[in-house]
Length: 256
Image (cartoon, rainbow, N blue to C red; front, side):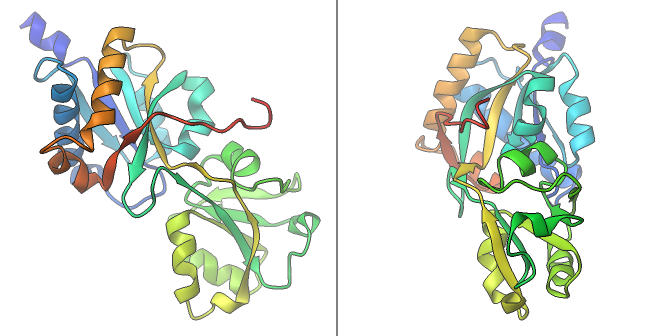
């Protein structure tokens, strides 16, 4: 019994703030992925559990638990919480229809924002709005937001874009998928690009607070790098829209 309890203490936390999907819907998918990853790494069966949380607050709380040794998080979450939670990148995800990197695009009412200073008093809405450090220092390239700009999270991107096109003091930060869909909107001509990020990681698997021994971490890293190419691995990865993993290539943020 003691051995079984000890094996269950290793947990992989999936956290995806701002995106649709409840914990109940995702739980079987992340559990299957954790089992496949552990088996590929040569870990004992049942030694890696997985939990899913669609909220920033819930994800942070779960990662503070001692059994949370790994996390699968979007890059904005990593930027916002890597120092606080001592997150160390293990691999970078290759996401279906996106790839390993993406650009973020800030849009606003056409003709309204012709210089960064004119964003004063605006609110930036985004699925990544829970991560203001990411928005200010990673997602906007060289554009510096005025100090009084508010940054807020939203899962209602279409509604946010309508508000911006109507002339409200709102700018919307879009991920690559959202930006690609923008031209199809009937009011797309009312919006213009204000800034765009360099290419940034989409999502990362991280070790939490050095809780995973170096040898086990290396074994898992090697296994994940092979999973996209291994026979049968698609059954655990495709439902999560994953094609595979690559070694992490993280940008330098303002010298940090």
